[in-house]
Length: 416
Image (tube, rainbow, N blue to C red; front, side):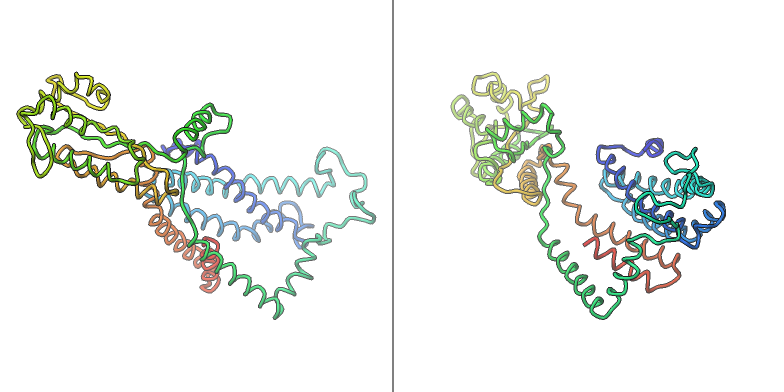
């Protein structure tokens, strides 16, 4: 993590989970090295020769796996999603450092263990010499390091022969096909959802806020607002657009009914009463004459009728409308990211009506919805790059096309 931060990679809470992933990858390489170190053909060599032979036997395996992992994470580091990019960059650094630690630090640890074993020192108390090194601690008889373990015996004498028999091959192929079919079916049933509440600890005070929100407003209602910016609000075009936007907001069944705090219809009602001579109809919409708009709006802003909207209207020093906000709440009728994305797209479509003042729709969850919109494309592209890299590396390292194809197909099945 420190090296990644030194390189300027952005750190987030998601990066913390990388520690568990790297722990698994490192442990896997460790077991491969230990298995080679404890092999009967290697076990009785001098410690220096024993480590060298173990590294020669297991080095190619951990080199291929580490290199393919590195290529896969480097492919993911080209993601357009910043958090995924940062995660893959940290992972690439972690995989590289893990490999170098395996062939340096752990190799030294194996050499020290070999020295201890050759001198018949105890493993837990390495300063003490075993009085009866060949006696079993559990059971009777003498202990021999050349005796294979129970799992090795089972795999070699029972599992492997039955798996390679004709019935075993049929069962293995059938189970593999079933697993692939279930994976493909499962992909068609996936739904995507995201809630900020999932990242809040149970003992956080914010959980009380969540409880109150669920009790009175529903757990899935999401705030969203339409913002408009500097422009000519007095023009007939802008006023007509605000009227049309109001109609669309009222007809939007993806919003909580009546949740929008919209200043425009209240302003028009105020003008109909207090500035009726200035009212006119354009394209079927009631608007204020452009010459009287600013004065009428200022009167509305200072009147009790407009007091509820002063927080959503920003005037310039010359009392000219500069910014507006129309807050609403997305409906909780649907669930999942696809439904939320549909709500976001609808609100943006409505905001585009007021193009003359650059209106936009925005909510605190829109950043995640936008990210999920491109997730599918990102997944396909990154998987294609990663699988291509793995195929290329395995082909170069193994020097055979058939094993590389098998490895790549296995990765596809696992990913599905």
